Image 1 (cartoon, rainbow, N blue to C red):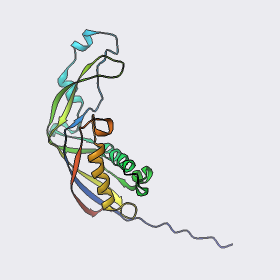
Image 2 (tube, one colour):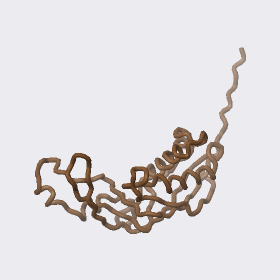
Image 3 (spheres, rainbow, N blue to C red):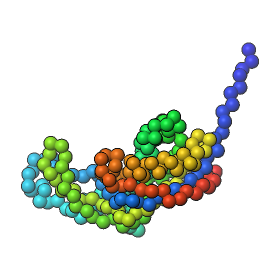
Length: 196
């Protein structure tokens, strides 16, 4: 019996640079740090807190010596995956969206100056606590995406990012979690050839 030859199509990968601009403040908390007296030290533990240190440690530094910081690329991709579920169309199944494009960078540089904000948070079953986090406002970012147009088209990717920015958001207290921070809009997109 003659062996059957199976041909696997080669997908042509391309790059897409999407420029976004925040429409609400982006609040980040790298360590999700909060003090709720975990060691039973009571008022002494809270008194010894260092707001400047907590603010500094909440930032995702790219190069601290140059003052550049960012936000995890996986957060933007996760927002797109969630947006695909919201769209509820056959072309936007979660597994397809996850596999359809890749963001090469670990951190997406946020163009904007992080400033310290102080909030009182109330976690379930715990007493109110202060949280010192970094806030970017205004903010912008350029996201470079590696994708195969035969799997997901540029208009589809643009729609995912548009819905992600409008309905899901990124960072702390985003719309997906019932808040309003971390929303953004797509300003432009530019396609170019992926490096060999």
